[in-house]
Length: 190
Image (cartoon, rainbow, N blue to C red):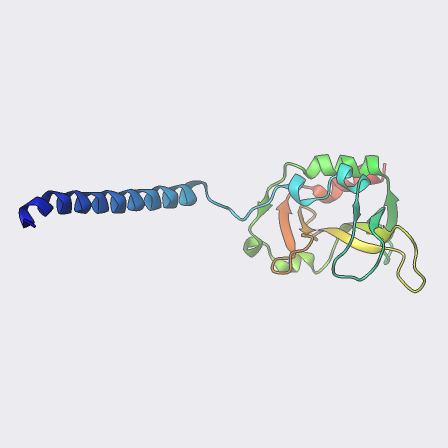
């Protein structure tokens, strides 16, 4: 076999290999550019973090961490707040309409980096909203309700955090909403 006949074939194979390598490098470059420009920011939006009223009303789930033959359903929403002149916080059960107003108020809030939030803000909670579920059938010796999600307002009255359900690594998403504590209070306590 003549080596001169294989030369064009080797040249074509070499060209194909170079073309594939350049295509791969171009694809990697485009992917890196897109990730750096539009990539994950690690941020949350209120409507994707706070449980929606529709989700609460249709809530029906089995907790895989607890052995029980029954499912959990929505139970109640509690608003805890400080009353002026009193040492003890007050608790009010709020209705779904009131909760929906809160949900709409916070639905467009975008989270802030938790590293930028002073943890001392939450040494004293000025207000909180707690969402509870209960088993669809009561079992003796079992608590009647379990906390599903908690939302806490820090002592500055504008920073709040939402408990992320099922997240062990970062259990809270932090948000800033100017005067949120007073706005929530006016929604829930007319």
